[in-house]
Image 1 (cartoon, helix red, strand yellow):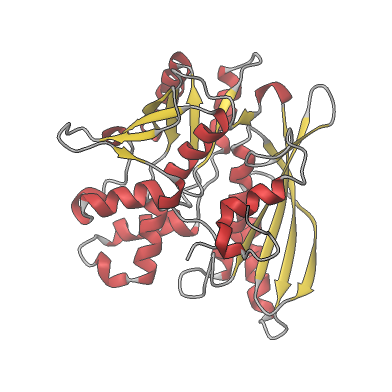
Image 2: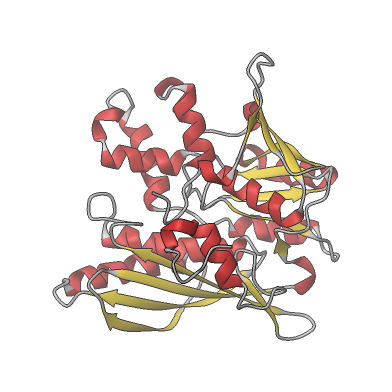
Length: 337
């Protein structure tokens, strides 16, 4: 056994560090996109925290302060949506260098507020400290019916895997901001649309309202958001539920621009591992999954099924192309070198 006194964080990576940290927390509260604190028999308080660091999650090259604020707020609201909760309020913690422009902070809060106003969510507090690196930490509070909370650990064999929206667009938008020349063959409106997905993501709270109408009775709902990538979401759900999955590549919704712009290999990489799409990945009984997709129309799709075992397999529509086994190591993880 490794001696933890000699281990560095980079030696164990994000997932290894999370295992250590989670050992200090109640097992029945942590492990999903947010914590669940039961306050009354009819309501549970949902709490989530998300951090953004200059140079890791945003930079002046790709993100204005307004967009950084919007993205930070949207990321937290997405975590609430991923739990089946409706937002109540947020607190904002800032670590700021002393020579940072006051205007930058004002614009940051403008972006946060613009996002929150769409969902009638107030800023209810926070903290400010001096820091050598600009850091933004938001804690969001939500409310949910305890019988309709979305968990990662309740997927059943035979459940259909539903995704909302398209995947890969945010990564494509980021690449266009970093390397504008790669978009020379795209129309202006195509580039603008992809960049907008990256800079101004929309948390899928609308889906939660629809689910609540479809499931008025206590019913386990399995899922999470895809902020760390579509593949990561499916893998995390399957690991928590101790099941496997089969995904059909041809069923995964992708931006229409990908077909005439990216190679199939790069398109698939963006879709599976690009991250920051802030869509929902849900595992539902077949009848419920079909009804939800019909309700959302082109804004959702069934992309696979939960299976026995532990492997997550991606199947290509061309049977001559070998199946691909997906793992967490293929996607982005903090501290990986």
